[in-house]
Length: 214
Image (cartoon, rainbow, N blue to C red; front, side, top):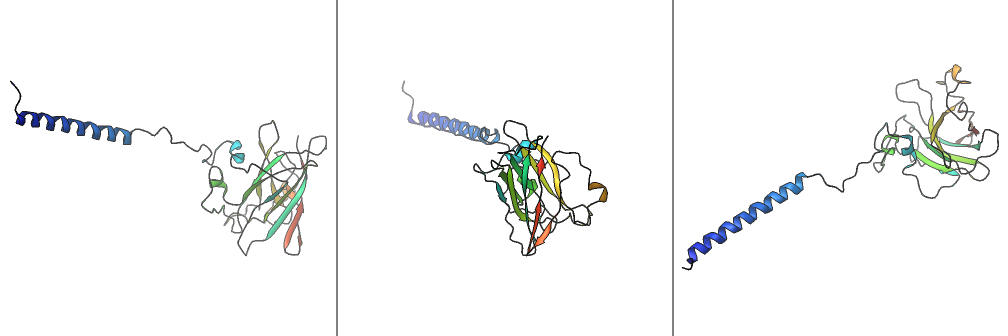
């Protein structure tokens, strides 16, 4: 006996409802399951490995690092010098990374920073020594941390071709009243004391720092 049209209608309705429930379940599962394409930025961490200092650097580097600043209250600063090997021969192709505070002593950000630079702020940059080991940093003079007596300083890391990167002693300034006298000849990292004797030339602070690497 053939099924009536009413029975067929009931069966079709039941099949349609089952299909809809399956589609809803699959949609919920796809929303709740972790997306395989999501990636975590391992350098977006203040305690990330030192390699992260070099993760976002430009593909092409020159011997001059330029760190822009639009604050009219900032004082321009230029530091240049030569990176040497332990035997005092010039060290070419050494990558220097530097970052520092702004004129208010803060690690200010533009909002476009990624990775380590989310923590280091917008005042950062890279350069690579030329064949004579020469480098130059054009930036602003950083301020001390707000409401502290910490010396003005520029943090810096070095990457030598074929070697693991490492930090060198901070750039500091001989005329800084917050620089403790006992720091003048004491240092624990590579690169010497890091204390730069800066002089005002026109409206720009000028200084020289030669860096000797062990």
